[in-house]
Length: 304
Image 1: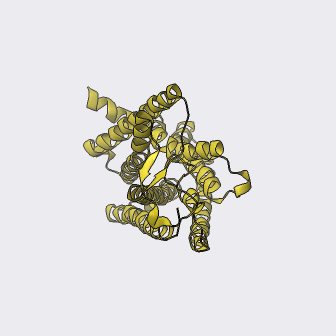
Image 2: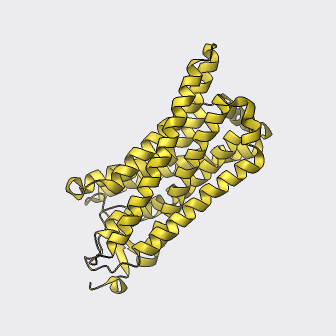
Image 3: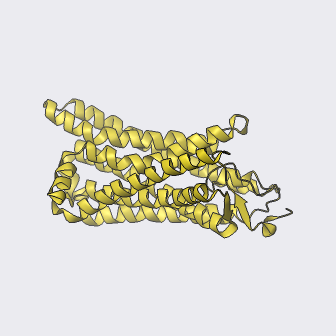
């Protein structure tokens, strides 16, 4: 293939050669996808239904569930369909759309996780100013900025990536369309432009991560000063799950996009991609609902 104009489709990574293993992966990913749909759907329904949960923290959690649904729905349906029908193909336009939506939801989710860390910081460290700093209008604005950040990031990366001439075949070493694996097919030095965008985003990503870390240092210092053991437990139960999600998200995505080619392998790339693209959307609802008494009580009311 001489250039990208001659590519009508890409070939995604095959999970296994044997049909039995393909079907096993199909049922595994289908189960994960259905669990993510159920868990995030319940959180969205519960928060929308119970007016007691119409607070900034739950408003951001509702947005996180929407982004999780979008993120996992961008990759897994195509993956499960390919496993079921024993194919690896995805069209050129389908790959571009998948990449755009994936970066969009991923970028918006990270921005929202940063906002949620700020919400927890104000709630615990500056409780008297909580109503002023995180009023309904401010929350809507912060959520809108998160979604807009994801959209602009996705637009830049998709336009940059798919403007490259591709002449190294059409086989991607990943189960969905991911930027590093598309760049490997480029035969032009123009790919350095996309590398520059990735490095710039990584710097912004790192600065925002520093903000999250500083916020949680202040949060944990404040929590340790709470005299009541029950109060400390409640604070930790809302903050630790968020910190766990952020840590998993940051470490895996940074490793995936910034690791040197010398340590890249199909199995390693696959595991890392699953950790940052599939596991957080599937686990987030259970992490937040299992550790949150108010959310569990609201869920019980729905089913009573």
